[in-house]
Amino acid sequence: MALRHAVLAALLDAELSGYQLAKNFDAGVANFWHALPQQVYAELARLEADGLVSGREVVQDTRPNKRMFKVTDTGIGELQRFAATTAKPTFLREDLLVQVQACDLVAADEVIARLDERAAYAAAKVELFGGLLDRIRGDRTEAEFLQHSTRIGPYLTCLRGLAYEQANRDWAQHCAAILRERQKNHARD
Amino acid sequence: MALRHAVLAALLDAELSGYQLAKNFDAGVANFWHALPQQVYAELARLEADGLVSGREVVQDTRPNKRMFKVTDTGIGELQRFAATTAKPTFLREDLLVQVQACDLVAADEVIARLDERAAYAAAKVELFGGLLDRIRGDRTEAEFLQHSTRIGPYLTCLRGLAYEQANRDWAQHCAAILRERQKNHARD
DNA sequence: TCAGAATAGTCAGATCCTTGAGTATCATGA
DNA sequence: TCATGATACTCAAGGATCTGACTATTCTGA
Image (cartoon, rainbow over the protein chains, first blue to last red):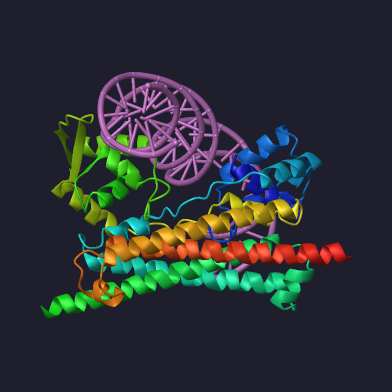
């Protein structure tokens, strides 16, 4: 029951096609959940069968036809019920952590390379999330926006994503610096 | 092939029984990977079949017999190969993020309650990881430890876990404060 | 003394996520 | 003009993870 509520939450802001929805859950852009198109389409079918979303066919001349989905009242009710349950916290589960855990017994330069890669990737995502936040906020200050906007959910989740990638970047840079320092010292022996 | 390397990495520091290993991967303590006992036992069986770990039976009087496992040279080689491959970064995938994403359309006090719960949980984990780092470091300063210890992998991964839970705590507190502020404003209207 | 937790595992089933392929049409750039 | 990419989906199969139950003994606290 995980993706289920994520799809409902993604449909709160606009009526979307499965394709657009799938794009929103793409690895590059997703700011509060990630899923592959196959999962999104399958979940949409289940949600529609359960009456939590309703789809309507949109006929297009120049493009393939598509189905647009929106959340039903039952769907809002389901989200409400979901918000009332305590979700169990998930744990960091990253291959990079495993590689760093083993860093003393494998070639250090390989691990340093992995850390540099990740630091660069995380830095790019920091840029991306930063820009996204700017766009959502518009010309308002953050305080103003958070106090007066009628819709702050996407902004708050994006803030979490930003902090996550900042932490990834800082940690990766820190670890890489330490391992490099140790390589220098080791070379001197 | 995810848990595979995590188990190998966990066995680098000591020969462990499946039971001890499973405890290390428990939700409460795990600092670089999490898995259930069932997964750990199954993975150990596969690793032993593939010659990456070797197990020996230890007969006990007062307790059930157990099998102790250690990494073989082949296992170290596999870790080496793994460290040379770029792992794809994983994305935050938290039910709490979905709940916050939907916070404007569901009862705000429910979401505030979820955020308070998570902040308290994260604060407890910060304490836990802080203490763990102190224990690993012993009486050395962090700089001293990181420069001269022969084994820093577990320390570095624990640092990441600490930063993760600090970020969770701060974000949850921040969101809860904003939602409370908005409730006050809304009540005035 | 008696329930409950800890030690040391195993088994089956369901769900969730990923890999990989495939269909069909249309717009865009070299 | 021709390959590439975007739109808009679908299907099958495998791997990973989680839920829940089960065995059997021993130590510990109320």
